[in-house]
Image 1 (cartoon, one colour):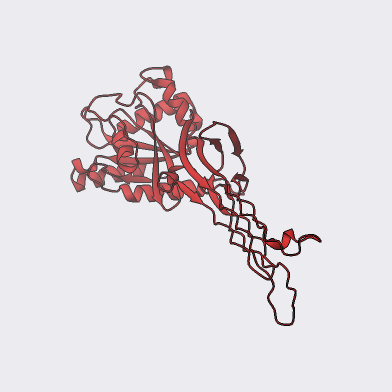
Image 2 (cartoon, helix red, strand yellow; image 1 turned 90 degrees about the vertical axis):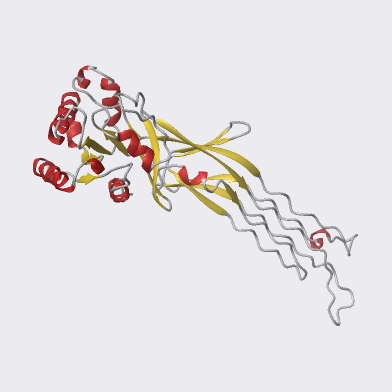
Amino acid sequence: MQFIDEATIWVEAGKGGGGALSFRREKYIPKGGPDGGDGGDGGSVYLVADEQLNTLVDFRFQPRYKAKNGQPGAGRNRTGPAGDDIFVKVPVGTTILDEETLENLGDLTEAGQQLLVAEGGRRGLGNARFKSSTNRAPRKTTPGTPGEQRRLRLQLKLLADVGLIGLPNAGKSTLIGQISAANPKVADYPFTTLVPTLGVVRAGHESSFVVADIPGLIEGAAQGQGLGVQFLRHVARSRVLLHLVDVAPPDGKSVLEQLEVVETELEAYAPSLLDKEIWIVLSKVDQVDEDPLQGMLEGVREIYPERPVHAVSALGDIGTRELINALMQSVIDSAPSE
């Protein structure tokens, strides 16, 4: 299952600098001619595909991008400096549409690929350009032209980097609501998540990853019970599976019993899922004392020694920052190299 991440930005190229009106006025040169230089071209705006980015979340905080204007020309046939181009980084796989016309301007499908989205204005001409045999002292110049302005819609088809798995009411929706801007439904009954909820988690400047809160598993999911294969089909496309386990469930099941239920369903649906990177997260740890919690952690680590194990409370804000940082590093490490 794919999700569409969208952002709207405003881009504005720089205008061209005007041409100069100037005449040589130097000692011992009685007939000075025109020497007004041209202006500089305005800077353009380019979008550049960057494989280090995987969401459009940063554009919600910085939606406007403007290139520098070209500078006016000057006497002695001096051309004004051109405005600097700007290069805006977007994730690989971004589609760019003109917001007004919905024209598809391009798709950035490879790292380093560039797309010109707003061309800088052209330079104006100085009066030296208009000198002729019949007009030795032209006073004509031209102004620079405006740069292009556009409102763009950026679209990115996302696959979740992290999929949250676990039994109903394991705390998945609460966790994604706490660590991202997603607003999933949260309540004390099974299947409050009926469709996957996508959240973008910011781990720092230009560092983010996508996490999906997916409907809870029950016994028999691989055979279509509950939300069944709709869930399992999606988790197969996540890089990391985050298995949340309630440390104090209403039915009194132990942490290891809950883990076994979900592991059994993953294996029944596709044994290859168990070869994915799976992290175990004990959730709602603010509801138990320290000694029982340590016993649970030791038991899990003994049965699953190869898996990272974390303890968090989304509502109590316990362990969430450490979990986010660790996940961000894992997503970076698992990204394909050049």
